[in-house]
Length: 123
Image 1 (cartoon, rainbow, N blue to C red):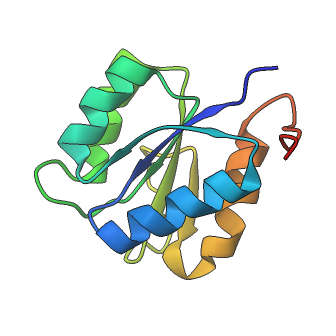
Image 2 (spheres, one colour):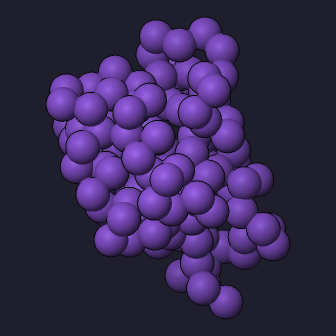
């Protein structure tokens, strides 16, 4: 069974590293790419066609909303999780939403978006 592909997008280098480690430790996902802004994320999404994008909302170049609109147009099947320190509710452009203070809930949330349910990879 193919592991779902995740694209991680955040302008904070330490947050990108934390997210990558979290998804690597879980083992049920393949990290297709990591982007530092919305424009880079949109271009990567077109190349990778990830299953799920974890997308910060406030970033340089393209913010999350603009990147999500581009991704929806070019990769409509993928799911987008708005992952933000400033948003209080789910934005129209996202399938799910999580505030960064709830980071420990992110992997289970992404897992719930993938069907069938994920099985952890053997170590």
